Image 1: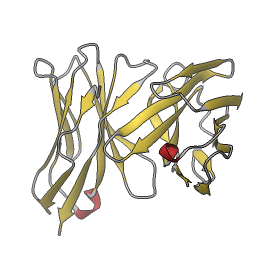
Image 2: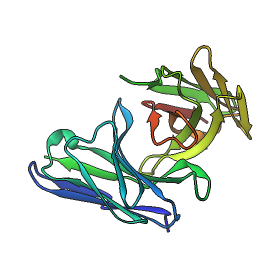
Image 3: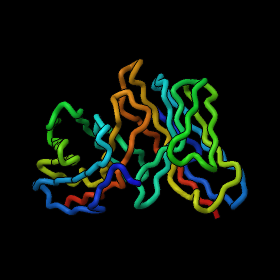
Image 4: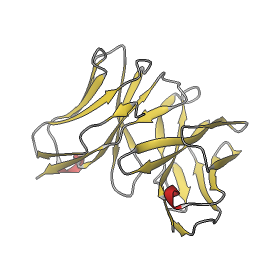
Amino acid sequence: DADVTQTPRNRITKTGKRIMLECSQTKGHDRMYWYRQDPGLGLRLIYYSFDVKDINKGEISDGYSVSRQAQAKFSLSLESAIPNQTALYFCATSDPAGTGDWELFFGEGSRLTVL
Amino acid sequence: DQQVKQNSPSLSVQEGRISILNCDYTNSMFDYFLWYKKYPAEGPTFLISISSIKDKNEDGRFTVFLNKSAKHLSLHIVPSQPGDSAVYFCAASASRTGNQFYFGTGTSLTVIP
């Protein structure tokens, strides 16, 4: 089983719908991140969380919200999806202060298409 | 503005030859640099890193070189193998425990058998 699991892996939705992408991890890491990947733009940070009570905006947080339900769970919501949110979304974890895993560990990605 | 740039979207190399992937950055505060490898339908996986106190780090067939004055790093793969065909992302952080990693746009490497 993957250490960082994302659901759903693929989702097609319509403009204006609310969408939630979920991430869970078994690595015991404190830090969790949401990135999106777009062709020609690489990976860009949406939100990150250093622990359950800590949520921070990344460089492209507009139109998104997150919830850190537990140390192992971090979900990303699109309250009202729009077509330019069509992208590949990645959850990642790290734990420089705990296990010493300072590099990012990524999930397999969630491909979202907004029509 | 893109703080980490990979100016070559793609690269093709013959099996057994050297692959050189390049990355430039603009922020002089970056202290840690990483390379990630990504296969289709998978998440990126960590490959190799280097801190700014070094100019070279080697791990098997993979070597990363850092030129701080030029704000440039490169990943060398020797010898290249077909299984190395993937997209490679360069990333940078202002510290090892930094809260934000900045990624380049990726270079798609194809190793031709």
